[in-house]
Image (cartoon, rainbow, N blue to C red; front, side, top):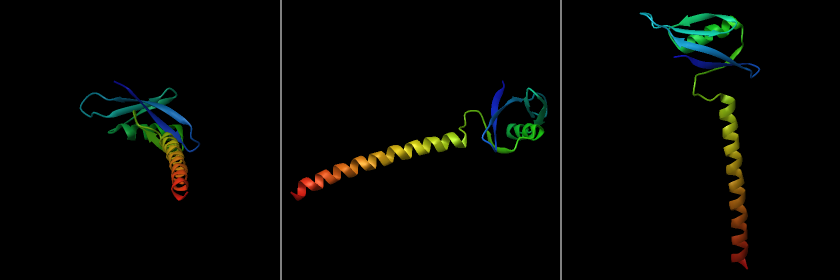
Length: 104
């Protein structure tokens, strides 16, 4: 069963790399892109890195299937931060109104 890993380069471009577990006694992993010969290694991440080196990609990140890129994690955290700041602003305004009512 094959997987698709991603290599994110220094410019933020994503490159797909097909990865398959080898068969036989060595149990190596094979990784390839359509335009690069296959590379193998004992682990899938290492095989992906070998393909990236063959493609001369300046690797910033290697992303396994099901994992988020750092950029998407940062975007999620920034959105969450914005929502929390909006909630703090809402609560601060409500507190000011309550304090104004008490002081009258």
